[in-house]
Image 1 (cartoon, helix red, strand yellow):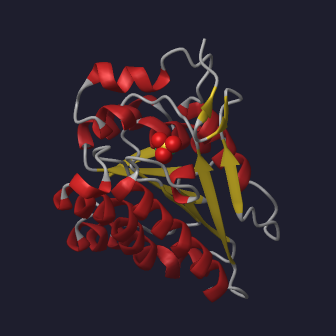
Image 2 (cartoon, helix red, strand yellow):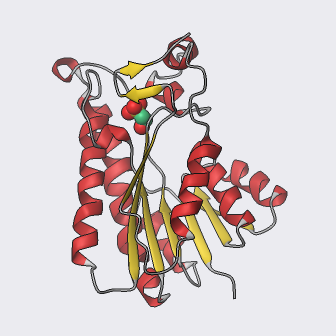
Amino acid sequence: MNRTAVVTGASSGIGEATARRLAAEGFDVVAAARRRERLDRLAAEVPGIRAATLDVTSQESVDAFAASLDRCDVLINNAGGAVGLEPVASGDVADWQQMYDVNVLGTLRVTQALLPRLIDSGDGVLLMLTSVAGLVSYEGGGGYNAAKHAQTSMTEVLRLELVGKPVRIVEVAPGMVHTEEFSLNRFRGDSSAADRVYQGVPDPLSADDVADAISWCVTRPAHVNIDRLVIRPRAQAAQHKIHRV
Ligand code: 8X3
C-alpha cells in the first residue's frame, strides 16, 4: 500500500506544489484546504491526489477531517500566512489573532489530531513549513514574526517530546518565495505593493523550489531526521541583504 501524505493549505502556492511533487514521488496525497473547488480541479488533474475540505482554524473541521482519513504517514503542516506589515505600535490585534490562529493553533490542531496516525504508521514524518520569519525578526514583521517563532519553537519541543517514537519532526524554513498569494494577502490585496517585494530580484524561489526541498526531506531513510532546512534564493544573502537589478 502506498504511503499517505496530508498537505494542508494545498489550494495554492507551496502547498499545491508540494501536493503535486509528493504525488509524483508515489504518495497517496490528501490535498486539504478551505477552497474546495481549487482542490477538486487539482485532484482531477493529478493522479494520486484527492481533495479534502479543511479549515485549520476550526476544531470541528479538523476533527471531521481526521476522522475521514484511513492512514497518515506524512503530514505537511503548510497552512499559514501573513496579514499586514504595520509596526508593533500600530498593529491590529485582529490581524495578530488571525496569524496566530492559522500559523500556530492551526498547526497545533492538525498535529494533535494526526499524531497518533503518524506514530502508528511506524515511520511518520511531521513537517512544519515555517519561515525565516521564525528565525529572525524584521521591522513590520510583528505578528507574523511572533507566530512563526512560536511555530518554530513548537517544532523543537515536539522533537524533544517524541524522541524514541517512530516519527521524524522536520522543519523547512523558506526565505523569499514568489507565490501567487503570500504577499498579496500580506498587503491585503494591493498587488502593486505585493509586486514590489520581488521587484528586480533576479530569481526569487518558486513554490516548486520549496516543494522540491520538502520532498527531499520526507524521502530520506527512516533514521535520517532533517531538523531544519533553511532555503533562500541566491539573491537573498540575509533578510535585509537582497540583490536587485
Ligand atoms: C515569508 C518569508 O521573509 O517574508 O515567510 O518573512 S519573509
